[in-house]
Length: 326
Image (cartoon, rainbow, N blue to C red; front, side):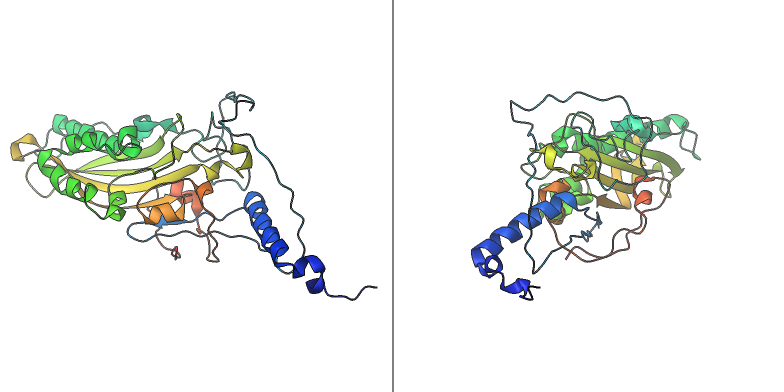
């Protein structure tokens, strides 16, 4: 029996070999191990990721090559049949199809954009007529579109549609934030994709609802919005993705909007709320932007989200308890 310690193996004593082996091991671990996906909230950032590290032993790594979307030799992607069911949480591993990026995610059966937003039939609210409530709903729908769905705003950072939806007076304080020097505050109002990343043609998809109640001020309608949006990112090498959670990020919102009738000045105002982003790149989220999970390798030891399924359920309140992304 050879009782020599593995720590004295000639390869492990070679610093160049150890550096190479460690690098290759991390690459393989990232591909084959599930990362625990955490969440980010305003104003703090929350994310938990787990990795298994093999230390003090020789590791043989098998490199896996995937086809890139820019490779002319890559086989063309063809849409598969429409899904009939959706998982309640992101799976450990699953097929990734860039033509149907929401397949095998909780958003598999959601509708595109505002089609996924439930709006009840408008009813009078005291002195506020049903038509005025309908108008308030429409204004909030335009605001939601501009903040989390409009690709000009999300990818090109053109927020003209948002300013128009809010109205000149109510848009002024929002514009000061969006065009100010502290970009970390931008995500409090809307979604912006980080530089260098692009959304796929599919989506964004949304699931949510609106409700209305009379405000305390004259001519004021309070619209409550509870919804979650799913964003699908392009990936340069889809063959190396663990699952759709690597490219699909979710933004959960509970927002109050104060909408005023024209007789009292009109306009839509943000009146408080909470949000969280799940299955995203932590570093980009800290800077106020949204980027796909595959773009970063973050090592952490904190606990994961206790009830991931509630993130995708607009009928449940947001749970912002949890560890921080340090």
